[in-house]
Image (cartoon, rainbow, N blue to C red; front, top):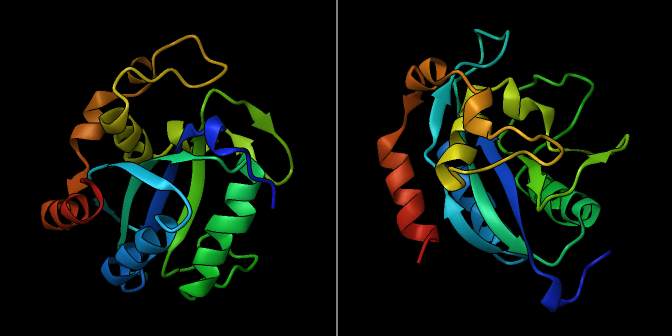
Length: 179
């Protein structure tokens, strides 16, 4: 496990989503996550249809900002993936299979990483409106690492306005995880 010293705490953003008993699993995942990192912000959560899978239940999607001393790969492989496994996530070749929880590292400080095991910033930020909306809420002046433009300039705000907010869940998560 590659962990930096506590003096090297950095800000990172993690997406938190699921579509199998998502409310229960979102809370459990965030409780497990806070055992390893400091959760500093919780975005609004959005209800979205499963991509290309109308037979699946809707997803609940949001993000958290965290402070961490873990390296990006250690955060992904030693924290996020074990939490998913603990909550019943079984990875398969089907990238769009239903899942109780999905935790993805979206951004890690100002790092750009392009490796087989990890790409940062996560390219889905620009293609999935709920991710860009969550990051813009948590960091309104965000510039994606390696990009000179502000994130809000790269996102169609009309698409963001069409997202379905789960207000009750968002409120409960913020009350529970933000001091």
